[in-house]
Length: 460
Image (cartoon, rainbow, N blue to C red; front, side, top):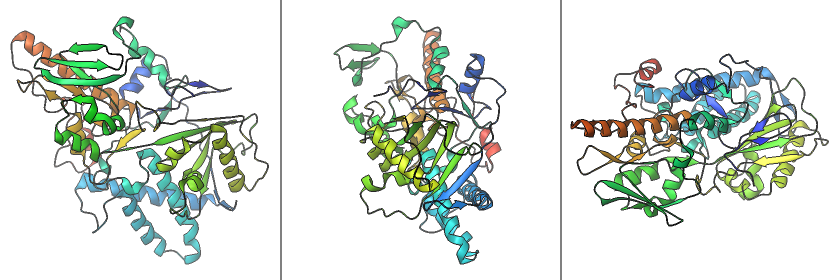
């Protein structure tokens, strides 16, 4: 079993089972830290991305059709985002991004000759599978349409850390005395009201720690599963309800390492245009149909993704079995029975991890951005001003959820609240209101475009 927090060396790269890319450059504190620390270059080479799409019977799909579908899909997604930014009302009965995209697809395909529809529909379904991995949802039918525009993409593309994402921990640890880090002590109970001026943390080892302020960075998946047992007394009902409403899915990676390359040298990603899948089949018989592509990390290293219940099932399989099934998939779509077996298969297993219980959060149908504010707001002391129990993590950021920079910013915000309260107490003046993290501002009601909304996000 591999440690999901550590990079795994291969012949050419270091694999990361968790976060791999820095998402965006402009305003991203993780990118700025990585550049300052010499982990990446400020000028990035932009690799050429060359796609090959194939049907399940091995027939290739002409690139101009792939490009046409990509362009149409981007417009459909832009319209989904506009529901939040422009306060539009969706068609009756349409609540999710998946439902809206399929409505758009039906209208789009209706304008084409019947013989041209099937292959394009397969490509739209491929894109929805890819989008589900990005969102972290079982499918885009779980992602709330009116709230999908709350997520903010930072400009600059995705940046890969050559030494693995965990290399960012080096500069983050600088200046932190090792003796102040207590590792290997899972927390079993957080008591936050037994004493008016303290929070007591009890570890599974029996050790107890007491502090004036505690920042809880437990992932949303663990909060969903254990919050009622973890906190004493239980968290307020409104916060618990918000925790349960928000989505937290499982997205897993499959790395396939080979002795020799076998995909065409000019192809960087093989897209899988699966035919219709029967959802009534047992997941054990169809889990691989959630894999939407194999992309090259190097000539001898491929990466595939799987999400949702199929990803959870994959975690129950031996890695060699996952490699065998992936070989069958590649042989089918390439129409090549001589596709080699990988010399090594490495898979993540985020649902099985007891301290994550999934991958990252999303706004599920029926939840809203307000739920993120509720989950991320501090619990105050009896004076109604001093933050006693604070929360941080990707699930606590209203526009950067699912990202490392979102987690980092909420952690920094929590510390700023503590420092502000401490300084105010030392000065004998009232602490600043702590109803919500001071560095996160809800967008102005009149904001109708992304630029105006970005102006409302303070990244200092």
